[in-house]
Image 1 (spheres, rainbow, N blue to C red):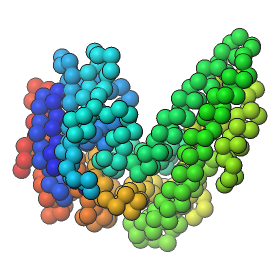
Image 2 (cartoon, rainbow, N blue to C red):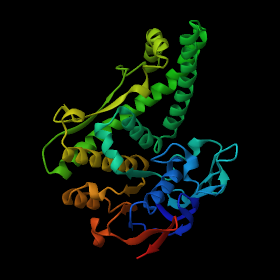
Image 3 (cartoon, rainbow, N blue to C red):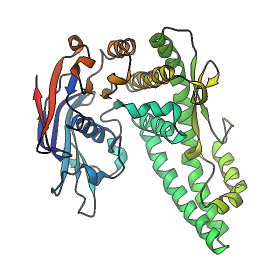
Image 4 (cartoon, rainbow, N blue to C red):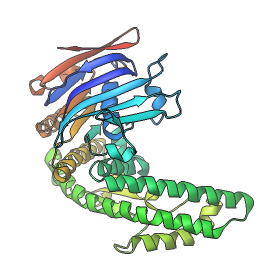
Length: 370
């Protein structure tokens, strides 16, 4: 899988851009704030329909413009395809996604068309920060190889929003319709079971690969493991168990005003030599673990889909020492890669197939091939 062309219009600080990346390693260097990360964000939108760094899509529209566009032409197992994301914040529908110039009916229709893995300095938080980052990491990875998983996520979140609205009303008024609450819980249970089963399956594969990758990068025999911590312990009858847990926790949930059990509360536990990394890991171990997770994600996507994902490396080279940089570069030879950095000396230029300098003049980004 590769991107043959990237086109932007009024996207962030790009008035207009047409770019033909190399199928190998592409390097974009320039000062901070010049617009390098915006290029990776545009690709991420065409892969997952969302940014890797913001939740408000309106922010990508260039100041003073009515719309923005990010578009890629790709080559995958299905042949040539075009994916475009159009942003129009002043209209009723704020974002439109088109595949081969046809508006998609459902957001899930774009999943798997362009698979990508992004690694940024913020990903170091996968180890030390809260569980929401780790759940997001899992959800973005699995959604790209399993459309049913993405649909289950949407269904579960919709059901949970409805349940939360009912219990908040019960908290405020002291009364409520338990039959409606029960109906929402049953609606949530089946997609929740899909989410939990798929997470368990992928994490088992991921942990095995990540253990090998960590030892290869660190050149140690330290054992890095990933495991899934869920409110449901059973392997079978997950939906039935969740319905029971929803009922058992109703009183506490009404008092707190939100749903306290389910896959939205689960976590990915990371251990090194059986000790939780969140409490005990050094900075070097954190960087190695985060890098191992991303490289393992690439391998999972390739093995389960049959195609190499596109790799986006957002200003991570300065965060890695020389040994880890060399290991990372050695791992990406089979993947189309977009690397951003402030200093092009952060990357061994002999390993780069195409290089661009990114600069900004009067607030507008300019990309020049070197």
